[in-house]
Length: 119
Image (cartoon, rainbow, N blue to C red; front, side, top):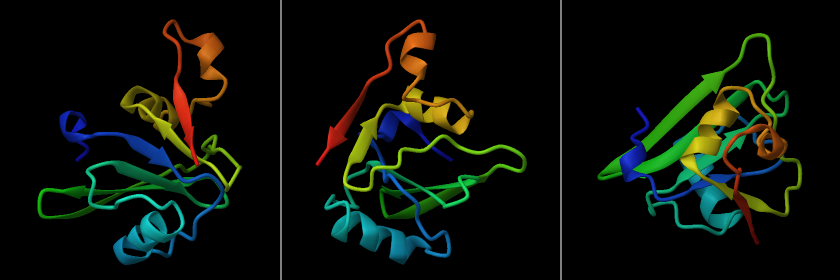
């Protein structure tokens, strides 16, 4: 279960990730490729090549949590640029999980969408 009160930031790993990776493989990606601290309390979000599955990895108190969502008929909108790590808010993560394209939601939502490119 995702607990919004405990989340510091949400980081998207652009491009595709091999969804055969579990906690150890994804945590290695966070540290080696994204160059972020996997124990920070942040959410790290990964998407597969077909854009129908998302995995969220995070550290909670004394262990890792791995959350998965798979769409049956639709696709997630996902950033492609592998050289950038995107930081978004919990509201934008909810939009993403609900199937909205977060890059275009800025003009469609009543409140402005914000995300930061972390290099």
